[in-house]
Length: 486
Image 1: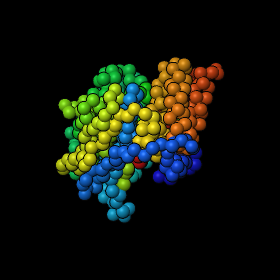
Image 2: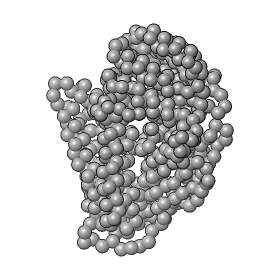
Image 3: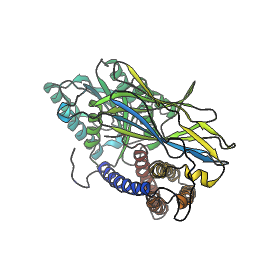
């Protein structure tokens, strides 16, 4: 959807991210051409294990991985990163298959939504209704002190559209925020009406804190996991300044959907349109990455996705995949570093469904990482291009998320300490590897530090800290999960 320049927080962040990606790609390319150590420092060629891996298969989905290094130093934290790339084949525009879609909107109509925020939500739903095809179905739930099924899940005919628009105009804002009742009613409606050959997506919008019904974090998350079990997506949108961004992010993660932060007054229509377009071009549902780590290997993180313990290791669920989508997820692992040895990282597999059956793809080779004694041995086995991507994309934005949490807590020293630690560690390694992309990212670190310091000064500190936490948090999350949104 094409929009006017500068309109809307979502488009603003997307434009910045696109510019950063272009610049970073160019810089990383330069780093790859100059791969190695600092000028005048010789690193002996010792030979190294492969850094690239792929899963055989001829279906619409591909699954590959790239290690940022094949060695860790003895006595270090043993951290390595593996970039997983999950991609779906594109479909020609005029021949693109559109999957019949069930779209459920769950809207907060508590008192704080009155005025501009409610009207923006109405406008977004109107625009969404206009895009629905005759095979699509739409449902609408609102909640405040209680939940109401305003529109049952119904096919999008001309008569129905007119009725839906009339219903929209009657929705008014009042009362508290009983989010649990809204989720229960919306998810029940979707699951009762599920049909073969259809894909479902639920969009939850709120501007406030859950304060009625079951407002517990665990209770709300438990509800969101229903979407993951049903192989559909729950996307969350936080509007304004008062909602709990950590809860809304966790709900989206548990529901294998996306999370958005939109300022009051911004246009929500683009967010709704993206989610609908992604749903109706879905080619793989219920993505699940399974990792069976080798002996002593620990799975530390996977771009912030919740890690689920399994009998053989861990798994995480990145959601769905639409035609032409490429998703990049950095997995961080810890390799034992007490002994000089080479170790298997383990088995890496991806499973997904197409509405009929599930397919599993698995790397044909096992990634291996050695623990080595000397710096020269270690740096010889660092893939500078991959390492630079891991720092710029995952390392920096993981740090930015931690800073956002510290700012939300009102802890200035903790936030600045996290930034300083990242800068020191990154500078030390880049002094040897000399990546222009990483050097450029360190300038962004300086800007983040200045923004954090500024949020703790001036007459309106709580509001400044709240805005920085929300904006930087969603920016970091989107960057770590490159390709997750349309």
